[in-house]
Length: 490
Image (cartoon, rainbow, N blue to C red):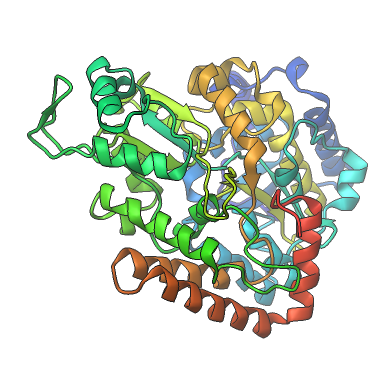
């Protein structure tokens, strides 16, 4: 925490005069729920007890939220007198910045905003403050939150973060095409199936192949001046692993941390994951969210597997041509393990953690509890420029969320949340997943076969486990599985 630094601060009187507390749908005092109000009251009491003047909290912020987070920072200052200074940074650079703080111990940031998967390494390095003491004092509410999301806030039995994002991957189709009578008739004639949300991954690829259209073609009474790609999904290094659990459909390791990928289930999953890339844009292996979202909004794809916020983007972005033309679907099942199962990986998510070296960790905690509380969290999810996604029962019936996403989407994504599974939630997450990503890329590029990739992944993963310590990894792995991180059990 720092005092009198350049930030999102505005004097309270000016804020009130300008109506900043009502900007972006800010609540009145009477509308704050008990969780948020406890945080507000706690922050005021803390500032008074410590005799702080012009207090400022610093947050390392995922840059995706640079256009939405400031509204809540201003609102918090108006309520408590505590300003928030944010330093936006790309999500690929945040983990190293957090781990650097474990060595530097500067306290320059009071809070870290990052994917939950940074937490195991950061907690093990001692850079995160355990939040159990503060949670016992201020009583947050996690009712209506799926088990996997709650479990992601903990590591080795201690709470280190709060989650405010239902980033379990979802499939979205072009509703206008699905409902096109000619398209439905031709698809039924070609496949013998009714057109709609695909039951499994093979059905999705079948649809992607059928609707993949070259520029200049006329199909179903529609002239395509630009190509219509059959599918889109994250296929780049640092992102492929976020979708792989949906194809694998089970735990990646056995109870002793032996990889399960070098198996019939693993090779089938790798093959299916790689095959559908032929119906995606040619540069997809270099794309992330900044490329995929606008491309979907341009109307040049029939389907996309992505974070749920892509649906909100399609409806809310002024340049989108797919407004009211989207059909949300529960994640298709995978048959790689034999029995069809649905696994919607919590592919990213946004969590909020407190720096163990902050001068005022309790004050940082209170802001996080306020932001992620049911009442304020609903408004964050509804923010037109935000990337927060629905994930808890309290999101149902919220007018702002319904306006941004639609009732159809909300019903689908909350159903999809039942199949949420975490990515690998142990120390060394990024090392394990980089090995997976690199080998998936080699298969997609035709350099190796799925069987060879499975062998390489198994060898690489065993190496990471040994480097960190197999005994410690087994213990953390078993605890996470037992806590409900992965749906599947050992």
